[in-house]
Image (cartoon, rainbow, N blue to C red; front, side, top):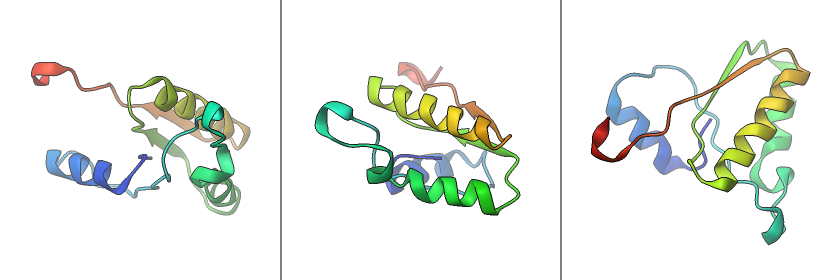
Length: 95
């Protein structure tokens, strides 16, 4: 799960992932009035309910908003018995 189509490109460049993507329309930002439905989490919940999803890999940005979004999604996934894991943030210098 990524925040934008540009994030897909970055992940594809690594050649390390061959699964399906779910692209959010940004991240949660309550101070800016951006809630779950504004970024497509209603669509995610529909898919969690209708499909046999077993795992979600969260690749949101390592910002306060990205972390809040990842935590919200992890809690949502838990309600449907879906494992949610977070990729490690990339550090300067590529390590």
